[in-house]
Amino acid sequence: MVHRCRLDSNDRLPAEAGEAYRRDGVIVIEDFVSAEQCNVLKARALALVAEHAPEAPGTVFSTRDQSHAKDRYFEESANRIGAFFEEGAFDAEGKLCVPLDRAINKIGHAMHDLDPLFDAFSRGPRLQAVAEGIGLDHPQLVQSMYIFKQPGIGGEVMCHQDSTFLYTEPQSVVGFWFAIEDAHRGNGCLGGIPGEHTKGLREVYMRDADGKLKMEPVQPELKWDMSRLEWLEVKEGTLIVFHGAFPHLSEPNRSEQSRHAYTLHAISGDADYPAGNWIQRPAALNMPFRGFV
Ligand code: FE2
Image: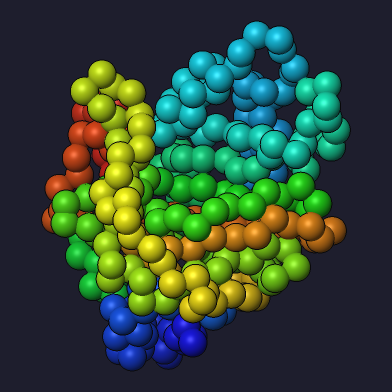
């Protein structure tokens, strides 16, 4: 069973949770953020949708191939705030068939650096204590996503490893997954396979010599033992922390209840961050990666 804990009375991560993280590649920290903080973040996320979704490609059906515009919009979202639609939000003619605030799959990927409220939520001594407890040295936040997992149309996420999309040498990526609403089997909670992170990475999404992002096999023969999959049903305010090589997935949300979650990905400032990673912060941007404190 995946280890569940709370921070102790000094806001430190209990030592056995650090051990469980090393063994399983995942821990669940209950009551990490208050319901009030969750509600504030949710309201801000919806405001960002209202602000950014109208400019996102995909809103209006076009016979023209929109994939180029979508690719560019995605790449530019590395260092800004972009909104991404749920596939099921459009009817057969390509028109939006749900209200805008029910149509968005996620926003990302730099809210933690650009939006003051997300910035404050994403940092602080309690998160620093978790990083220390799991052995993440000199954490640097690289990416943030707010995932809506909309009622009825929230799509399936196939089993994957987050280090496929953010890669360091040696591996140091850690995912911080905050339940902003209750997550359960009915609305598409996370599931994952404890211990499988020790097998390493299956594939990596990197920029090639021509600057094109593509998937490269690392261990294409790698198989995960799906018979040991555990569902991580959690209450609002819970923080799930997982290793970049922890295989995880989520089912479609077929319920009438959304499943909002906020995710942060941190790397160790001591690790090498290859130039092939899709998120880069050129010095001219004057927006270097920052840590929890
Ligand atoms: Fe993931």
